[in-house]
Length: 357
Image 1 (cartoon, one colour):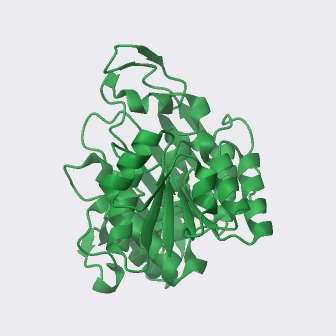
Image 2 (image 1 turned 180 degrees about the vertical axis):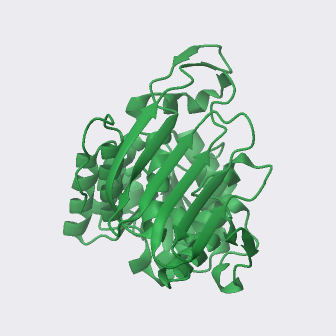
């Protein structure tokens, strides 16, 4: 499958950090095209990554006959237009999460892809972590009996210092759609549903605990409007209670822990201690698994991307599913549901959340 990546900056970003090394490690894929907004960076990206085709026009990349799968890895606000260009060109598309800025936009993209017959995947790679996949299979097989409680906590070091890199400044603006609530919140709720079952009711509360930051390079003040904490409680359709607490600004060691308790025991997945703060994020981490506090060995059959660093390994597992079992990959329909859950979680706690179907 020949891939074109929109947003493959040669300097930084999720594409060079995860997507490109992931694709290079997989025999089912070939990276053939990159696109950035500037001609100089597009040419440089093609040279750095050893890719034959470079574009500054994303539509031209999508329309090129050498491209089968268009991958969108840019800011959320630009997702809709780029995804539509890929769909209009009759191509399959893989868009990073969050899919869009609103539920309505996400639903429109899902409908467009469905009507065009394009396979449309969303970057919810956390569910393919070996630890998560193993625990899910165990839970679904009844290893801990009937699920009664699910508890998730996850922290990030983002914003733990007052001065932050300039390239992250836009994520502190609530209108960007790239804050903790949308990014980590979506991955968290997807993980809960994937492992333990659908969410039926929920209510949430988000706050801003660090209202001011400065841009490290310039000293410019950032007035933070994007929440840096999110708490969600609710009930799964099977009757189990669930809760999730997420926060940025972690001054210590970032960590993620998902605990599933049933009538016959408790299973947990926890981020492994690592010097790389990215590795603690629930959509990236290579988790450690425990049953009633005792460590479990994850069978080798669950480790499908040996030899890769944690970031590209997380994405490579999703790509591998696209090639070998695309029906098991989260789609735009998955994304629409998550956007609805997040939209509900952002309401004030006094608002009753309806049953979600």
